[in-house]
Amino acid sequence: MRFTGAKKIRYMVFLVGALLAVSGCGHLRTDFEDPRVKVVSLQALPAEGMEQSFAIGLRISNPNAFALNLVGMSYSLRLQGYDLLDGVANNIPEIPAYSEVPIEVKATVNMLNGLRFIRTILTAPQSTIQYELAAKLALDSRLLPTIRLVEKGNIALTQ
Image (cartoon, rainbow, N blue to C red):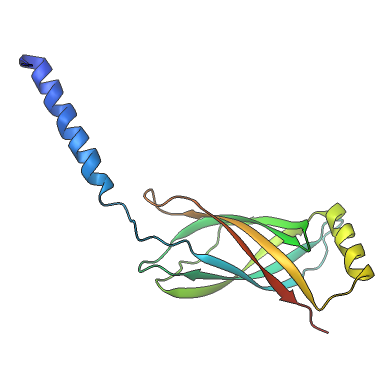
């Protein structure tokens, strides 16, 4: 197959572009590990009208050899199986390599599930509450994807 003139130039441009695209894929990070997010505290904030909010203390761990720059996150928290709290935050600090950073975020209560949760806790008191945190972390990077995490654990109730 012989190309001449403009066809030859188009073919060469296409070939160089394809080679650049393939070689660019080799530079993508393959050693990336998802960060971990743990719930470390949960505190009721003063009510504003009919809306109740909570401060959720989180600890974000970065197991990677490079810093993570987060532009924001969305999150929801299930307690004892009830979808109870959700929120968004955009003031997340940089998470240095091989580090843990504590942050505090605000979440609002789903009132209907909140009432169900309170009823459950009052009828069967427990010393710990099971939680499930679902979070979406948006990284300030075109090469790394948005990270979706689900972390489960227990929160000890203090007397």
